[in-house]
Every structure is written in C-alpha cells, then in structure tokens.
Length: 112
Length: 112
View 1 (tube, rainbow over the protein chains, first blue to last red):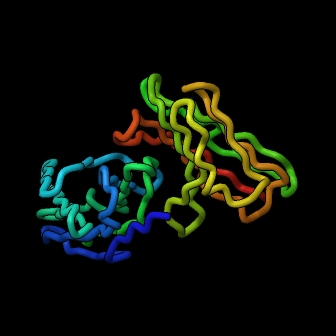
View 2 (view 1 turned 180 degrees about the vertical axis):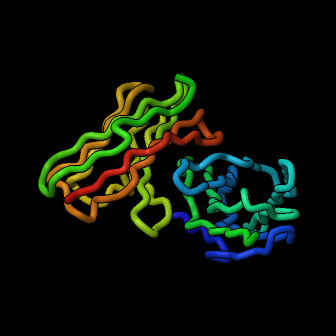
C-alpha cells in the first residue's frame, strides 16, 4: 500500500498572499505525480502531471515542483484569490502499481 | 459524450436495499476508477480497471460491494444490502494508461 502524505491538512491564507503545500511519497518505483484541484460541489480536476525529477510546471499563478529522489512535490500559489479556495489533492502512480493513489488533500481557504 | 458521465446523480435508498451506480468513461480510456467520499473524509479508493487486466479490488470495503466493467466501456458499481455507512458521493474517473484522470460529477448516495 502506497502512503501519500499531504501537509498541512488545512490552510487559511489572506487574499493576495502566496502559499505552498507539500506532498510526500515513497520514491521507489515512482512513475508519475498528479496534482488535482477539488472545489466544493464539483469533481476533482487535474492541474499537473509530472514524471521527471526536477520537473516544474506552471499554470497561471499556480506552479509545482517535483523531487523524485527524496519523494516530495510542492504546489505554490502566488497572489491567492478567493477562487483558489479548494482542496488540493496529489496522487502518485508507480511501476508495478499503476493505479492513482491519492493523499487526503490540503484544504485551502482564501480569506477576502 | 465528451466527459465521464455518472448516473444517477442522486440516489436515496432504504437500508438493506441493493443499489447500482453507473459510469460511462471517456471513449478510448483504458483505465477506470471508482472512489468514494464520505462526509468530511478524503477520496477513498474502491476499485481500478485497466484494459483487460484483472481489476484491483483492494479498496472495496466489504463483500457487499462489487463492480464490473465491460471491455473498455461502461462500469457498474453494485452495493448490496446497503447500510447507512455506505452514504457517500461515489466518483468515477477514467484515463488513458498512466495519464491524468478525468472525473465524473459523482453519484450522491443516501441510505436512510
């Protein structure tokens, strides 16, 4: 069983501030790491899929980095806006265990 | 359709009844997942189908739960003799092998 850990569990950030949170995972047999945004009353939507050590991806104000050797990824949000409020999930897949295994998420609330 | 379609969107059932939830994945997607989210909890993996391989049923919580998938098309999740703790949003997702998952809107199951 893969153990994907996300921290913090929840986070309140003032509008306009930048923030980041972490996903940790076992580095052995790693294939890919996914970040999803899950807004209330909606379904999770993919933000990024990363496979290579040192990968950096960016979409607007949101970016992510990946360290496969030490088994972690950071998600960064610059200049937080109320619409960024959501639960951010990370998931990994491995060689030999291809299904996506999700962490429990970081619940982000932006305070106007 | 263009996305993952789930039906019904809402289901209220009496304790002890059987229910069947349906998922139509994106055409051509070989991987199909079922997850659930109970109130206040994260995403809980239930079952994973990949092509013609044997499904990964390791997340099914009891033998009252079963799922089938016909080839690379429709999947049904069946819950027999429903219990109140089965109340949750049941999410289906599909993907090409080892790529990002696309989620349906979910079925909200309420057992009364």
